[in-house]
Every structure is written in structure tokens, then in C-alpha cells.
Image 1 (cartoon, rainbow, N blue to C red):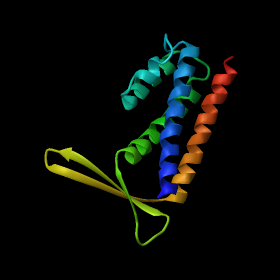
Image 2 (cartoon, one colour):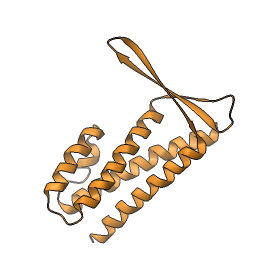
Image 3 (cartoon, rainbow, N blue to C red):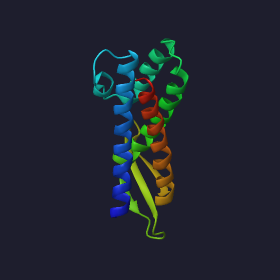
Image 4 (cartoon, helix red, strand yellow):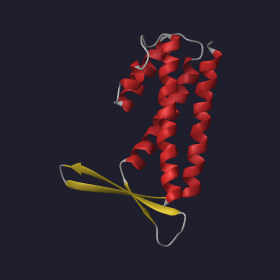
Length: 144
């Protein structure tokens, strides 16, 4: 399973990279007041919503572009969380196909969410997200 393990690691690291870039971007444009203020907030889904509102209220010329990239980061966050907090098993019928099992506690008992995915699909998602990170980095460089 080395291939899938590396790919899941790329998902997690790519997401961390995006969070770091957003932290630096927000500091540079004055949305945050100190380095790591955004990054230190571990409630990522909530903070994306809060900081997106702050960004859109800032009047910054690039605000809508950054907000759209934040939507991409939020979408990738869901993938990252699903992979990081699930049991991943190889589908015995298909070499490059995997089954993700994620469990949730509810008032009705344990709910199991199952999703089948392939290495090529995940590779495409990682590549697309790396483009989001490149766009964030380009915006950050452009503010110098």
C-alpha cells in the first residue's frame, strides 16, 4: 500500500501548505494581526467561513479571487478529513481501487459511510489542489 499511503500523505501536506499560504496572505493584507493567527485556529471549516466574510468586507481588489480559492481549500479539507480519519482498504477486485470506511456516532447508533475511489482519481484531485496552492502563492508574491 505504499502508493496510496504516499498519496494520502500528499493530500494532508497539500492542505497544510494551503493553510500556511492563507495565513501569510491574511497577515500581508491585514485580515490578521499576527503571524499564525489563522493557522493556529484548528476549527478549519468555521474559520474559513469567518475569514472569508472578513476578506469580502475588506474591499480588497483580489477579495473575490481569494474567496474562490478558499472555497477550493474548504472542499479539499473535506477530502483531507475523510482520508485522514477513515479506514482505507484495498478493493480485492481492482488493483488501483480502494474503499474508504468512515464511522460516525449518532443518536441512532454508529453510521458507516463507505466510498470507493481509485488512485488515478485521487492523483487528479491532488494535482488540481496543487494548482490552488500555486494560485495562492502567486497572489502572495504579487502583494510584495
